[in-house]
Structure formats: structure tokens, C-alpha cells
Length: 318
Image 1 (cartoon, rainbow, N blue to C red):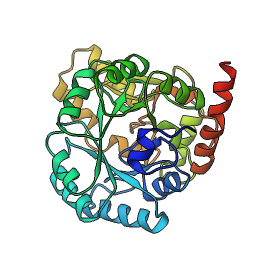
Image 2 (cartoon, rainbow, N blue to C red):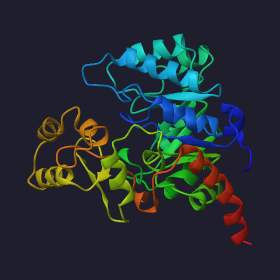
Image 3 (cartoon, rainbow, N blue to C red):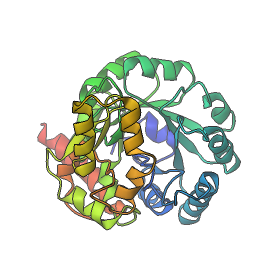
């Protein structure tokens, strides 16, 4: 696979980044991805109980990852988290190589992180936000379309509409995310000007991922219409269709307020679905490309398959 500015920037073999998924991107997964030549990402809430200390859980995940790999890895930091300052202080203290920020103003911590020698990637869902992130000094932007699982941008721009427009407007490298599931998606993203890709859903079903087996099986069994966007009043969120998404859609149709929807969803429904495998009461964040996931395999097999598949796709193009 061709080297890009992202490969050089992050010190990785392939410009392939494992997306940060709050409850399930654990040390074992991140290390396996990094060892296979990509960039693994851990999340502060990975595998934690709701009563655990967020900072101590992240410290544990970082140190465990360091035990399992000597290659670069990153930390996922949603800036809307009320403890984001403490988490930033922690990643600086632990000398993490890369931080992927999202859901907030990149001006808040980018300078502090970069002054500590940390590379900063920021998730954006529009050209405006990409230009703002570049202005505030991020090293690269992750242009994430609304095919992605979990929380998405209010404008709901598809990945392959968003990426080329962002590429045309910023000078920093662009990483494409949202609905990219195989070598075909990688080649298509690169053709649009991206210099790397981020994938989340594809890694849910890896053996190293701490996601519950029922969640993994639900992803494997998903088809092309198995996900849905809900919560548009509070923030579009994509997940597998289940009783929880049905209830939220029912509430939305009945004119429920944003506060009512937030109260129903609460804090840990996504933990119930993703870590506990609770199909009836949990949220199962998942990207629209889930129908392309065929089974549970090792993270290295995922990376190796993607890398091997790229030349075949390019050759078919003639």
C-alpha cells in the first residue's frame, strides 16, 4: 500500500486507522492494529464499569497497550466530555503519540497537546469545521460522513460527498471515515484525495475487541438496511435497528423534546448494548456498511486483507 503523508506523520506502515468507539476500543484491539501496521486507538471508557474512574481506566488502557506494542497508537478524546481537561493532562503525562479529538472545539486543547509532541487528528463533518480545525493547528482532519456508526454531524453529509470538498479546502492531510469497509472503499477514498482511512465497524467483530459476542454476531448478521439514524434533535446517531431505536423514532414522531429523548437514552445505553449485549435495552452503534462484515477474525487478518486487496482493486480499474 502506498505511503502517504498520514503514514509519515503517524509513523505507521499503512495509512489505516482504527476508529475510537467509546466502550469497546480496548488496549488489546489497539495494540493488535498497531502491531499489524495501522494505528490503533483506545478510548477512555473502554471496558469500564460506570462507577470506575475515567482517568484511571484510561491510564490502565494506555499502559496495557504499551505492554502489548512498541508501535505508535492513539487515544480517542471526545471534547464534549466534562473531564476532557483531566484526560488531556493524562495523555500528556503518559506520553501518548497521537490523540484523535471530536465533538468539540479543536482550539481548546490542540496547542497544549502539540506542545507536548502529540500529533492531533480532529474529526469533522463539514468543510467549515475542517477549515476551522486546520486554523487551530491540527495535524490532520478526519472527514467523517454520516454512514459512520455512533454520533454524526447535523448536516448528514455522506462520506464521498464530504471528503473531496474537504480535500479541496485544506492543506493538512485528510483521513476519510464513514462506511469504508474494504479495499474498494480505501481505493475510492484515496481517489477522492484522502491520504488515509479510518474504520470502526470493521473492527467491532475482531477477536481482540472487547465488544459482547451478541453485539459482534448482530453486526455479522446485519444487512444493507440494518442501521438507522436517530436522535436528530440531540445529535444524529447511527446504530443497529432494535427496540431502542424503534422507541426513539416513535418519540421523535410524536414530537418529543430533545430533553425527553436525552432522558430516555441516558448515559449508558450504549454500554448496555455494546459491552453487555443487551439487544432489548441497549444501543448498538454501527456503521451503514455492516452488511459487508462477514465474520469474527483477528485484527491482523483485517489489516492484512485490506492491504492485500488494494492492488487487486487498482488492477481491476485497468
